Image (cartoon, rainbow, N blue to C red; front, side, top):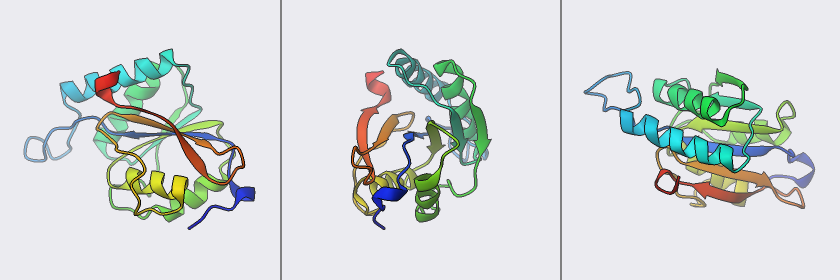
Length: 166
C-alpha cells in the first residue's frame, strides 16, 4: 500500500516496543521486569531532554505495553491520554492502522506502544510502502520517531533511540 501524498497527516509518530517483560511461565500477564522498567525510563528521560512532546499515547492493551506507555508519558512529563486501542497486538494486520494514521487529525504527535513484529511491519509500510521490508531494528524499550516527509508522501525515520544509548 503506497500512501497518497494528499492523505498524509502532519503528525509526528513515535513507535515504542514494550520494555523487557517476564516470561509467560513466570507470570501469564507478563508485566515489565525491573530492567524493563529502568530501560523505558531511561529512554523516556532522554526523549524528554531532546524535546519530545506527545499529545496522545495508544497501546495494545497487553499489560507490558500498558506499563510501558504509562512510564513513557510519566517520564516525558506531559499528560496525554493513555488508551488501549484494538489492532496493535503483535500479529495484527498493519494496513488498518496505517490507513487510520494517514487521516488522524486529533493529535500533533502520537505514541504507539506495542510489540514486534507489528511495529516493524507498520514502520516499514509507512516509510517505504512495503510492510515486508525492514526499515528499522526495534529493541525492547526503544523509541523510534517517524515524521511526515516534506513532500507529504509518507513518513521518514527521524531517529532511533535504543535503551543502551539512553
